[in-house]
Length: 313
Image (cartoon, rainbow, N blue to C red; front, top):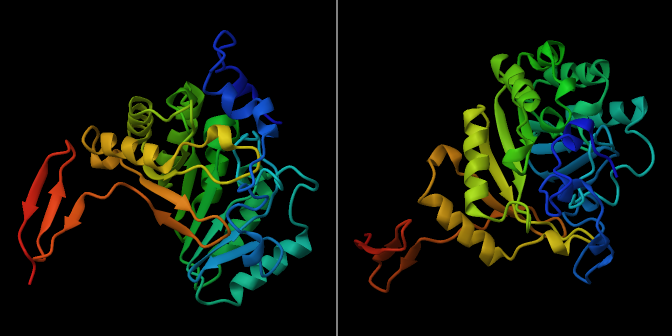
């Protein structure tokens, strides 16, 4: 397990269902491993052409330079590999991964993930960002991280300067509950935003933590207030020992319906399922449209009222 002092300070020890503690403190329920749960639930391994690279989609790759995080989420889809031996890629492995990107001109976007790439020493992160910035066909760099929220002291002007290169560097911040937005976290996020770093979010739908439209509404509004665009709400992956965190898809769709009529479009993420086995992500939000035999439609509004839509030629 791993948890930072910042996250420890947010836990209410008198609340047995504290939403921070439940994300990071081990639970005996993790010993319940279901037959459908997988060691590699999103299929990274079959799409790994060289060490450190996952190439699932034609125009983008994951670059995984590090296998540790400042916190270990108990529901992590990479929980079987993150934190298990070695801090990350050797210099030779990193160069091999960069060579793979250099040699594949279809790669338009590179996503740094892991582990958490922002846990790396600034010099190593700087080297990677500079190397990617110099590859002509790579036009966008993205960093997936929990650091600005769980370890905000790592985010300073020096880090922001490293991320300011000729190509856009997007930072996708993983956060699951409004309680995570401490004053220190908000300051770290502002440091990135004030330096022109575009910010998006990733959230996992977690039973007993945020599977409530009121909580998610507060979370997504807090994100937007802090200049983070809600991007993905992930349905829980089939990682081993995580069934106690997973809602049903039907429950997730019902929550998304509630949010649609309640909060601004700026606050609406896409509800996403990563198909088990590595077939990619698909949106699984509720459907509001039903086609009729005469090529017309019935459309359901956010308040469950049904309206006709005329036939299409």
